Length: 479
Image 1 (cartoon, helix red, strand yellow):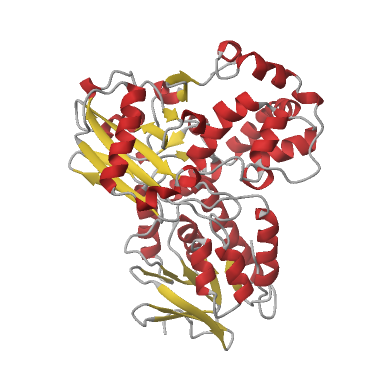
Image 2: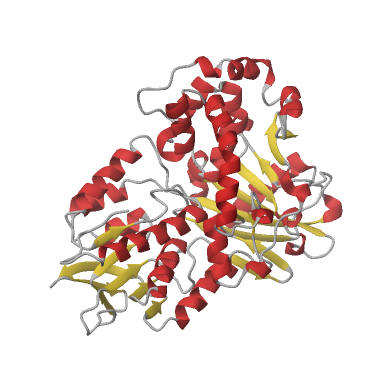
């Protein structure tokens, strides 16, 4: 039995080695706690996958991280700050497709006034936004944006953004759950415009505070990666964990059942290998966590398994540079649903980081599937490549076939924070509190971004460490 200490000290059993589990294990391990982390895959990092084939360097999951103080602190603690790279200024431009043409998103008031993405009707709605009353009930994101900002903003800004971030549909996502900052701006200020102005006034205070905690100004507002991709970060955490004497990492071990006996949680993997810990933390996808808890609480299992994860595929395409007529002078393009394309969005990967493609070539990372097209699960790799290459060839004026292709499939890509999501989370918390020393976290709650997951893993560690300062048996804590 691995994981239970002999001296009476509390031990922690973490199931799931994505970025949430890694961040949690790192913080606990740095506080000299006994930690066993078990991951089903041979590779740690979850959806973070940096791959090199020949001279092509690609990301099959998240492509960049948004710099903020907590991320910088983590990177610095792993001695990786000198390896960090940032996209060139030229890549700041973002494109949205309208009527089959790429149109740059406005980068200031002057360009916004002329933008066909907003139009007269859009501006009429925007200028009257401060006079609309806040909602008194939970709304879909589509209803929220349509009410406050108008249909043009929904169609040309929010719809493609949601496809790119959530692989979701604004008609299903909860505004309060999926975009809480927008929701609370309305609730606190009665208007997004007034709330935005208030935030701008507070930005100087925030900058000063960030400076106090050692966050460099040159990192502010930047996207971050590494020459070897984002796996540099997860590998850095792994190497740090391997040096900590009280931490045990187990990969290639798919836990199939968990149960609690004699104040200890026990887990058994597909090989019959057993693990144990006084406290169990599941950082796996909601459906996996639900399945693991089938013998613990059927109602908890049902609630977790009801969280939807649509399938998504990353299709990576490489072309000779001369075959692409578009200048690729930006971050990438998002494709609104009204354009009737299957491809959700495209990153100009070799514009972001030129070393990602061989000399004389360009690299695209494209995404297809999600709520808009769940049928990707039934299509072959060849079909996905043909669909995506056809879509982007029309939009970017490409007159050749790709010379490099790679397809990565995520059967459960991104959890959907649909209407009722927050009520479901509250119910999960209520049920889970009846299971002593059980803790549930993951990107199915409290934010889907890599940065959110890092913060949530760290916060859970602080909660667990704080619980240890109390006498008696620690109560279950659900972040």
